Image 1 (tube, helix red, strand yellow):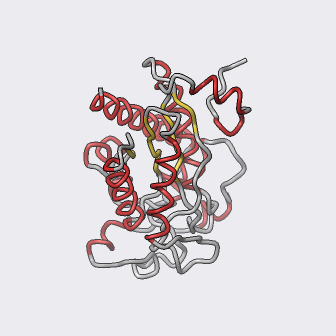
Image 2 (spheres, one colour):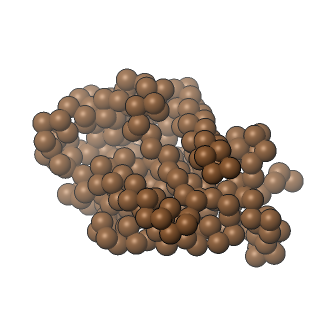
Length: 251
């Protein structure tokens, strides 16, 4: 039987055995529940975060680092998508307190906690950065993977950098998960949209202000499973490198 890397699937004695030496790393999949066009599920970011965390754990094992995947977080700050039914958003203070508590409880039995984040709402990223900073001041070894950093966005490609939201980038990744999640008729029927970055530069603060009446940006029709598998691997590799660099900075 393959080694279990998912904490919630363990019994408490199994968790004790896996964490007794306090050398394991906690990987927390951090997503959201928000509108992702008429063709992708509300939990798109969460599904991607879970996959990234599991792949990251396997990659870290290859580097001699034991990691366990924590239960995913599906509640986040979602200010851009707040106008759309089904979007669930936390206030910034609530999200900040929650993420700090997660970091604190995670490192009780783990050497470090890494938030594997695939939710890119600007307000959410601000809160997450603050949570990491305040957690570190409290003595917690914590980091998060910021895919928007130039270093990583360059690797993820032009479609990502233009501000894909439920466009070819995210839709390809969800398709590659091989789950019955994509509404194919809608995916191939809706027209391409300009990426979100241009509207952000013009001062838009919500998807509707940015012209996204259907809560997507980019070209869902251009998505492919092959591209999606490449994207999933890229994200996991970025996450693994980020965690390794964090650990090295603490050694």
